[in-house]
Length: 370
Image (cartoon, rainbow, N blue to C red; front, side, top):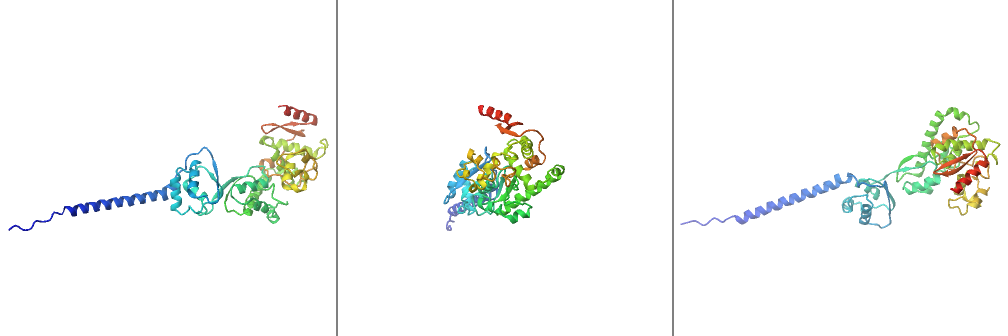
């Protein structure tokens, strides 16, 4: 008698095969996910940003702006390669609810991580590289610092009027104008205004000591002239000399006006930038500055109430009208020797220099006919 037939294990074998396949697919999926996450968190943050024809992009992030519109704008401006990927990166790190508001400056190219640091408040301070040009006044410096997100303009201006701070750097003046050395600085977005002023004052001290060491013989000729006098005249030269090669010649013109009995009215520098500065620094002092919009009027030139008006007041103005660079300081200390008393702009930043008023008026007429 035959025994019972053995059951065929086809179904169980199929089930195991399906289970193995499912397990393999799950493993591959998990490995793929881990690989994607690894790329997103390890490789992607430091990838190079897209090439750009511009060096800087400025975005205005309004209150309430969400991540995706910001990402789309960043992509359209060429800051990031892919808005979806960058948005995912930000969300996975929990940065999407902590976006910076206001003006955001981005210097290109930037990695996704650098963009994230500038776009959110969760990643700490950001480094801000800022150029302070030669000839900027403290008011212009304050405005630039605020635009770049370093500190508030009014707070910086208050710091530049701190007499104890000025005294600690040997500055005998009511404010720091003239002593905020023009240079490229790096600050972070939470730098205190006093610290910003300190950095610039310290830089000025170092640069001025270098000049003193190199031009010791020329300094010895400036009898009766204080450091403040030198800086004040240099600040005027800096504003007048658009072409670097003319600094020493323009300084020579002003020295001639201050020293000569031939130039009338005597010892008057007659420099337009001094009038403009007065309308910015002490607008309440001069009635003619009431409607000042950056342009000089005849009334401003004639107004003796403006203490910085070198058309109406002899000698140097009360203080520097800008922050001169090293070359302008050297130009005043070691000016070009000549017989020029006048100069007038002739285009491209250059000037025509004259010895007599008659020659000067002819040059003015020629320029007006161009």
